[in-house]
Length: 358
Image: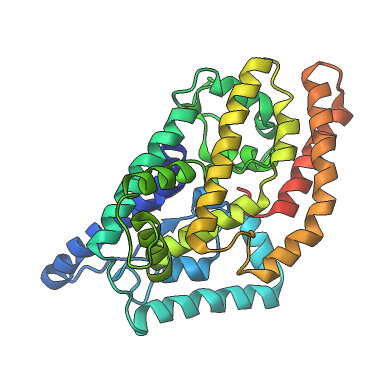
């Protein structure tokens, strides 16, 4: 089984996906030998969550982006609770989703096999992974006061009271990020509209990579680093799908709403310092995606989702403002059972509107 959730919480979005990609390649090599000697076949079990930070995203693209040899007529994956509801509650939609999974598996198996990534691509991905993980862990595990900021600026404590996800929210009776389960971790960042597990660290990684390769020039006159990243996006399904998922996550984020949630952090200096760090990385990541993909607008290649979000979000945004006020009252001891119920209803409403949440 390939685990997306905790690997993301430990090292960030890019490193999680890259390490799993390498693990799959190693397993294929191992089981090719076992298939010949012992007739043992390999079936990958992808423990994907609903949110991109836990391996979620469009299943069709995800299957086609798998390394060569990992989809040979079969693949196994998890479908999370809210994903099951949205995909299979309606019989017609359910059949369409099953057909999509079968079609992707057949294509990955029978059509022109995916070419292995070039050594140049693999080396670049390794460098991006190291820099991305360094930026991510510098914020989440090495920034003094980050835990206080997280528990103050997200409704994590209120989410823990709901009968959803892994129970309890933390494996131990503590407020350490290391002990927090991956579902409430990712779910909380979605509620405050930062969606941090789905993109943080990539902007810094691209910036460092392009600085390192700035002196190398491509035939087109572009920076050698940018030229290579654009080529990876164009020719490598793994890289393209990962960036497409980041693009979707950024489209669902909202810094203005996130700033409202940050106001719940009582330490003003801590609040400003950490939010400024997150905001700067958000802009770096958005710029990196624009440079690599050539698209300045989010979801430029997914008009249907862009339209859907444009229609849904005007209904979700007021719920965020209501939630912040209710949480503020509840934590100040001014709330009763009705306030708590209102918080839980707002959590469910925002999750239903955002989708890809847990």
